[in-house]
Image (tube, rainbow, N blue to C red; front, side, top):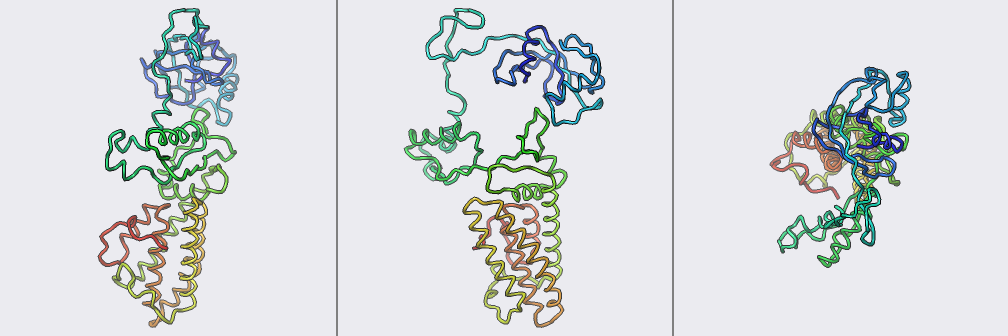
Length: 399
């Protein structure tokens, strides 16, 4: 549990109660480390003796156990705003009161040579820690330990080294570097060929998301509100060349609207389905006498496939999502589907048009599947394809 630098002395001066605007999940009897939020130093531990959920307006302003008392409610709200500057706080804001028994402990001593005494309490009875490597050194064994190392397992020979590691930029030195030198030392091979540094999701103001500051966004809430596919696509669509994504809910709303567009386009195609067809579209590429609209959509589809494959090979996932969005919404839905309505009224072109509609839809589902897995799979399972025994994920990728 974190305390501001100017509050730490209060804890040592018999402050036994703290007010919080989020539930830390603590219960009576739990032990918790106390941390200086400014320096990151652990300055002691505490045992929780009482937990009370209330609101800001019901907090006792003269509570001496809190050490700091207030004359007016506005002073308390102002104090909260210091720690939660971006959070809207009023009398009805939920608050948690934690009462604790504090135990001041001496910090760990980090020194090149054995010290004679503790610089905090002066004690000369010091015991050296046996385990001095941090958790990142054990995490560095992950690329080969998961495959049975140090035993020579078949999985280890087959899957080590791997091709790509995806990680965040803030643990390149902590984790990635350690995996590399551990792999070279213990396996005589680097564990991966490529490291993809994925973007960091920030607030729309460009600040890092933080639970303690109340600036985080729970993805489960977005999924509950808009759906998993909309959330995935809305975030992927924002990925650009820099290493940051400024999150706005408007992009998730855009993702939901696009998923609806995909679903409605599929409904139109299925309304005009040509009956059951072969899964590989046998003879489809040899169709002659294509209408101008048919030629254009197939040509544009091929260009889109090449562009998306190039984007994915270069880890340009945002570009891939944007390219697919433009093709499906503007080229397929806005142009070809509208023109196909007239072609479907003509006996000579109806069968050919319905096959092209289905072919473009199926190919689009494959391309969208990494971004929108659930809706694309549901649509695929309803397509009129013969001998369809597999899921969309393991179908041949468009090239």
